[in-house]
Image (cartoon, rainbow, N blue to C red; front, side):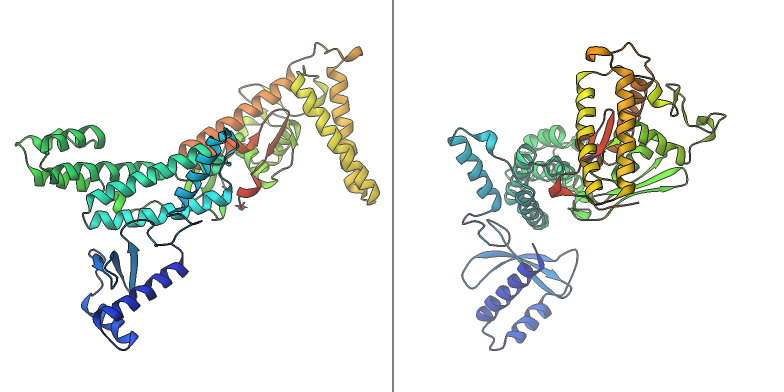
Length: 440
């Protein structure tokens, strides 16, 4: 719920309270309400009935009161003429299916942002309902958020959006399960509640060692979500991200999550790619960048050049090796040459000598590389494996670095897996709707 909507809700609440209690001055009604209800962080929610007879949830804050609708969308707004944004986008998907074009449906970054923020409001109300012990509505809202997460995961256009709410799922699923178990307890189905708690939530069967005890089981259920209540999931879409080297470690932060990883060549290569989104780096350029990086002495040859200990890879002399080129590699080279020729033409038009020299040098280098790999009539030469091993080794190290990141920050691992291109040319290609502000 955004600040403007919260303010509107407060005003609406105060106006209804004014009518209900009969005060003639708006500030007096507010003061009276706040004086009757001192702020207590542990007991700050209650259900009230407005002047129109509807039940609402009131939340006492240090400086005022917030209001949530108890049913429907938490802020009471209708979105695109429907009860919620989720209902609207599901209706869009149903219409696409009826038109036999379900594959044409997707959720843009803007659509996902709308659903993300709506999901937050439902989660806020879910926590309030849990504190109010309204178990049926707890189960209802938890199930709603779980369906919303799955819908985004299936239909989001951007990979980053598909996994944005993944870290919410375990906590929401637990709220849903606890709500269902508490309903069973209230209906005096103790054994069904215990069986469900053990199977779905992981509650120990030891709670029943002394026989049926409703209070003991209820306490165990509440304890299972205590940490989730204290640490609700967050949504970090525009926070500055960090990929910073400090001595022999990389400090990485993404979407509110942080990790400290021991420096490796793969992480060094990733840092180069992240600095220049959209730019293609030939594998030789990435190898050259490692020469400038601080590489452990054990991985440096007597001549001062970096050596890949696992693959006996030496960066120098790369173009003299002559790799075997498959069809994909040839297509990559052709595309890069086309780009370089276009860049060279633009440099000549703009009289940009430095840019032209750089493009010409890379064209010459690629031409030499192709000449050493392709013989007369376009037939592949039987060449040494040095260059292919270079491509394979760098690809392996970059992918291993992404795997390490994925273990520490899964959302960033998904992002890099989707946006890092490997091969003879490496690049980082963030989706234009989900650009990342990296700080180095």
